[in-house]
Structures are given as structure tokens and as C-alpha cells.
Amino acid sequence: MLDMTRVTTRVLDVATTVPTTPLDPGAVVDGAPAAGSRALAAVSGVEVGVWEMTPGTATDVEVDEVFVVLSGSGTVSFDDDGEQVELAPGSVVRLRSGERTTWVVRETIRKIYVA
Figure (tube, rainbow, N blue to C red):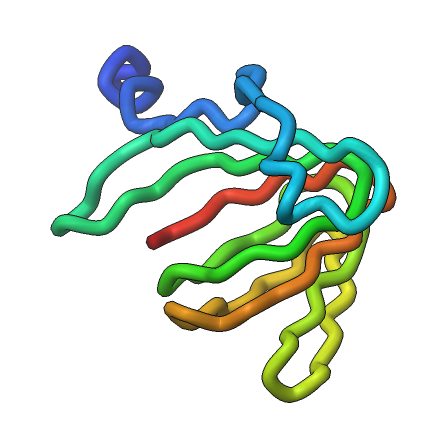
């Protein structure tokens, strides 16, 4: 028989509220976006967590990361080459350390990241 207690302790909670704070005014291009993250696990020295950003536009300098959008919509633009990626549930994106990006969030983005 399957021990359900053991199985449920392996499930990472991606639904719990992520505490957000207003972004640095120097990074905000439009609106009043807030962002925050909550670590879920460490796997072989790599952090897995949930990140959220509320509507607005802001710039960032990235770390090495792969993420999957769980909910929300927006775009992330890469300043070095002008590439623009649409973000929607199921989008999987690779960020590289040092890349300069601009995030335009239309509906609060929630993503799970591995960094």
C-alpha cells in the first residue's frame, strides 16, 4: 500500500502567497510593480522557488536561471539583442547571468524558477 504521508511531503507548495515589496524606483519604467520570491528547495546546490511580479514595467539584471510561468501574462525583452519573449502559463525561459532585461507584466506573473 502507498504511504500518502510520505508522498505529500515531496510536493512543493507553489500556491502559497509570495510576499512582495515595491521594486527599486530606479528600475521601474511604468506603474508601481512589486516583486518577491519564496525558496522551495535546494537541489545539489541549486535553488528552486516561486517568484511573482505585479503589473507594471521594470528593468533587471539577470542571474543564471530557467523558469516556467505558472500564471499571468507579460513579456520579457532582452536589451542586448532586442529579443522579446511572450510570457503565459507554460512558457519556459532561460535567463543568463548578466543579461539586461525589461519586464512588462500585464497580469501578475507567478513562475517557478531553478537558479
